[in-house]
Image (cartoon, rainbow, N blue to C red; front, top):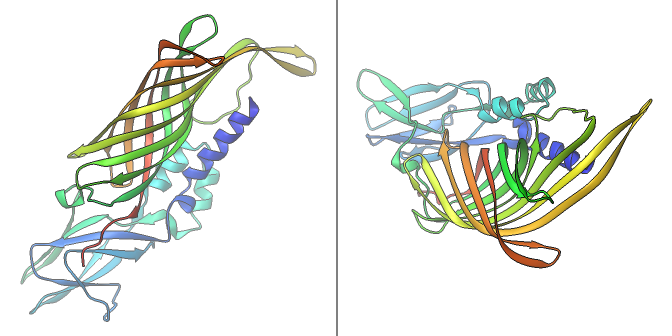
Length: 323
């Protein structure tokens, strides 16, 4: 069982630091109601016609935009801030101070607003951060990579003496999301869940009899969006494992013995939804009810389910760019 905790810990540490998640550049979407052009950080050669999506280097320094039209040219300073991956990644990965210390040596911890709106007039130049707009909605051929951390897991599974509930935390999953049209997308995910008693990795000593549960799953779903909400429906399979163990103290050591275990493969439907906190960070909930169970190569009709909350970190891999 130690290998499960080791793989879990390695997986969570891998996705948690901004040094590992963030690239050295990020993109900023710029819009305006006026016919203007923009250059970045005093680059007088490359001018972008607005609207535009521009790749910029991450830095603790403000981003300098030079904005011009036929009669006016002015500058804007876009504030730099610490990214979501820096704050939330290290908060939930269990690395704590170590993760923050690593990130503090790298400019990848910084980011800029993903979308800004420029207002250029005769007296003043200003910008506003666009928290959400229709032009940020997914478009056809958009491809994203997702990594998530389940934080709140309810497993209803075969315990050997019937079916029972197991509650806990932690896991890891990864997947892709591809938009077939401007409205509908295909999702494929693979992941694992545990009933670990704490929401962060930590050493736990067991004494006497205890039990533990795990589940691995895969799904394929079709989804769509309504404003900040995203929802999916499809099919899933999962494999649940239940263990009864006993720890006996034989001073100065402990002996951990497996009393029995039950493993079962299940098939059913997948129902998911998530809320967009930002373009790169979402909070979601998944309900995976199963109706077909296979144990010892025998199939039967029986209900079980996986229900879990998750923190989702998203990275766009490809998006059609406007010319």
